[in-house]
Structure formats: C-alpha cells, structure tokens
Length: 101
Length: 91
Image 1: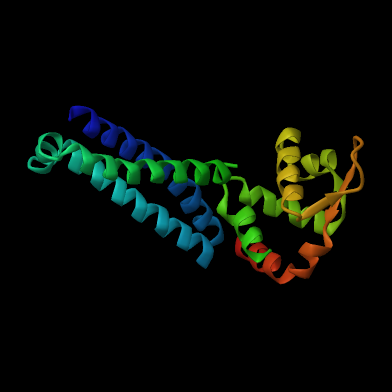
Image 2: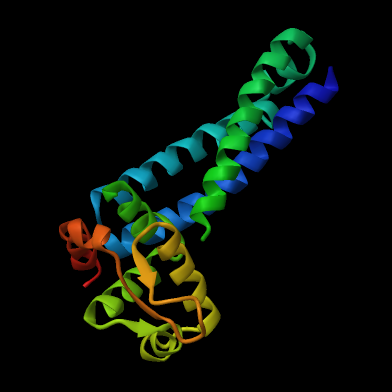
C-alpha cells in the first residue's frame, strides 16, 4: 500500500510547486494592477495552495493521519483519492502553461 | 473579449509588458524594432508578446514581411473602455 501514499505525496507536492508559480504571477500582477480580477486570481491560487499544502502535510507529517493513510486506507479508496489529485495536477499544468507567458 | 483582455493583460506573467505594448501601438502603429527601442525591451520579448496579442485578436500587422507595422484591431477598439480601465490601473 506504500506506493499509493507516495503517489499522493508526489502529486500534492507538484501541485504546491505549480500553485507557488501561479500565486507568484498573480500576486505580482495584483500588486501592479490592484484590480478585482487580479485579486480574485490571487485569492484563488493562495487558497488552493493552502489546500494542497495541507494535504501534503497530512500525508507526510501529521502524527496520526500520515500513519493511518500509509497503513489503513484500502487500495480502492486510494485510487479514487489519487484520481482527484492527478486531475487537479493536470488542470494546474495547463493553467500554469497559459499563465507563465 | 473582455475576459480575454483581462487575462492576457493582467492574468499572465508578461501582462504588464503587453499593456505597455498596447498603449504604444495605440499612440501610433510601429514595427517590432521601434517598439523594442521605444519601450526598452528585448526584440525577442517584443516579438513574443506581439505574437500573443495577435493570437488573441488584440493587434494585427500590416503584412508578414520584416518590419511589418503593428496596429490595434477593430475588435479591441470596440472594447476600448476595458483596455482603458486596465491601463488606468497601472498608471
């Protein structure tokens, strides 16, 4: 079952990296434009960054939950969870691709 | 079009420089070389941003040959209030 939690850690870590990039661009643009539009993008990326950072924390460091996820969660549940993480990763890759331009 | 303008000009990494290019082209149509000089930007950077602006129907050029002059499209003129609002934010 160890492989599933590794994939979960890697995909949430990659999401964190992509969201750091997006937050960097959008917060910088908010600083320059101070518009509703750039504020919305900034808040969105920071909250989604918090979500993924929290997921990574839970999978890797949380005393209780990291052990539980590593040993007690059955494979079918992991597959469903990972589908969510991986889809989010792909969505962020495309968003970063158009934004880092 | 408004959504495209907001995203291309304020949602991306190169947005602020693209705003400067749109302003410059609005002042008077220029070729990529003149724009690079006038805005003190790298020629390749200017070409890239102009390609993005063309791709999104914000500017058009007078032809494909070297030295083509870039100007605003009718479409962006129709949404000029949005561009002015964006320009106003960086001033």
